[in-house]
Image (cartoon, rainbow, N blue to C red; front, side, top):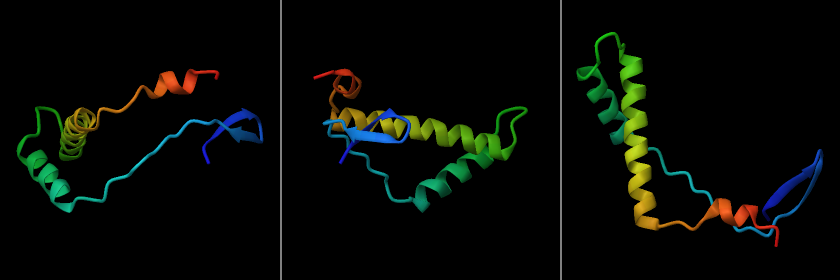
Length: 83
């Protein structure tokens, strides 16, 4: 059941069908990010910052590819519909 917060402590069904999935961990992807980060640190950037930068870039690329593949609906429009 999907709920929408109405007031503090009170929830009612929203009627919207929202699905969320969390992908399994990919140790190969993590290893690739860490290896690429080790060899691509920008000037003034440490290994952690490089890994975070590469992870963000890869996440954005993966998300964009998945959105193109799935072609999701207009979630914000559906949530704002008072009907």
